[in-house]
Image (cartoon, rainbow, N blue to C red; front, side, top):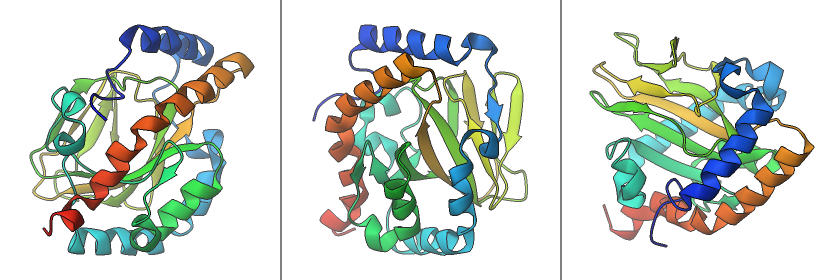
Length: 234
């Protein structure tokens, strides 16, 4: 499918984002959140961290993870074409390869009703994600550190707050706030990301679920990108 779920239908997205952010507390809402307070179910994933890390390590050792620009060039041009992403689950669609490559993450996504997306994010040395906002305000994003350089560790800035990842430790971030990511270390930063439905009132939550159902048509574009090196013999 042509286009990008991040930039298509800007007027509708602006209206729904206004509804979601007003329901969530507006610009005064916090940017860095505690997982137990918002999504206590992530404890089940964190308890299986050694298994999850082993699966991610094996994936990175045997597969060529696609760059963002390969499957969403429109949005990648705004953020970074060098950001590497492997989607195990998106908008309710599983990546069937993940059943053997990342079974722990996919099982969590499929068994947790309020999960929207689940993927691995790799930021190579020297790669930056410049200041931006996530284009859709109906989610909150959970980060779990998998491989974090200890020398000059990468960090993310959200408004005027900074967060540095730690292996095996999770955090919830409101990425609809202005934010940027920097990896000035000599090693890749690898994290698992899980997008959850943003907690809101009844009307906003119903609207959010409807809008996310409409976004399912974009799932193949992202999920199938995980098969790029398999299909092309890389």
